[in-house]
Length: 94
Image (cartoon, rainbow, N blue to C red; front, side, top):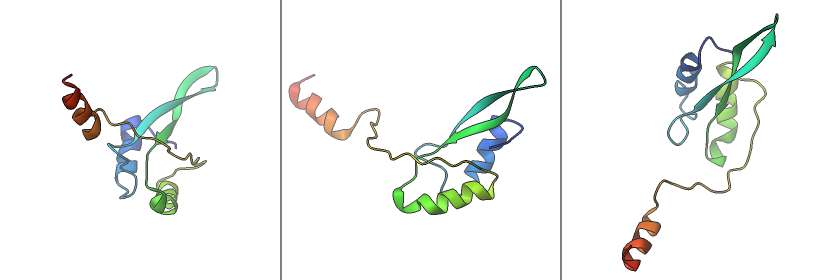
């Protein structure tokens, strides 16, 4: 997605209801070489959305200037510390 800064792109992404992700979007600069200078005119956006919200999310990305949308299935999400893990550690006395 084109933008003047990562913050500006993040604001556009967060303005859309389906694109907040788990904790917010990841916005990373894409460095392009033009006129012998390296600059970041594009930003890569990563968001996690439920499968049922996929089409709506793609529409929202396009509405704010997103292009070249790539979809990858998310197989696992490992939280910082899951309730079951905490329970296991507690039962083991660790």
